[in-house]
Image (cartoon, rainbow, N blue to C red; front, top):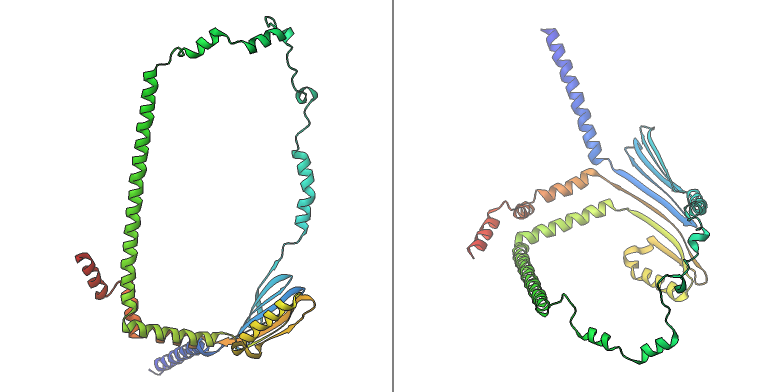
Length: 336
């Protein structure tokens, strides 16, 4: 009996330890903040670095960019992943440009032979057997006098053509044109009917969703959702931001406009963004630093509070079509 009791006691202690570890891990995931920071500068080239850490650097992700992007993931100080992505260098482009003339020379067609390039000589009329060269007097006589046989031949109808057949062809082409116009008109009528049906359907949907929007519970759900979203953004966004930049556009007027924009945004930005103007030269240099943190438990609390609200759940049910309100609305539409 004592042995059984000791075994049960040991098993209970082990289970309690396991449950305690699981509870501690859950609480750590929910309430230990994930910290992040980023630094960067721009002076002729961009250099930036970022780090995401959790639980006293137990898990860390580091990202750096200086002519190439590198990512390093560490757990308990042990590097488990390192990845580098280099930018495409210009050597490939130079190689391509160097090989371009060679490929162009290889693909260029060979010069044609002398026999192919020279145009074919026109045959001499005198060399063609049976050809009678026309003398100048005969050509003038032909140009000055009309040939009665030729005029009679032009006036006479050509053999094989019947005037009635040409009229039938014209009538056939006119009938085909009428059929095409009728088909086009029917197609246009069908398109207009489709457009009218689509417009009616969109109008019914607009009326339906407008009726949903005008409900009091929808307005309450919207206000709650917007409030929770604003709180989540305030929790997630960086708490410290410092930006320093030297800006010069080369034109004193446009540089002054940049300063005017900073003055307009000063109530929201404050001293977080500092701009040093350069009214003489065209340049853009600067650096930034930001730092923040977030807790999964806080974000989950805002989301859970939103999902447990009865107005939000009712609105989701209406949009999914699972409530009796939408069924009654569809029944009224079918009755109309």
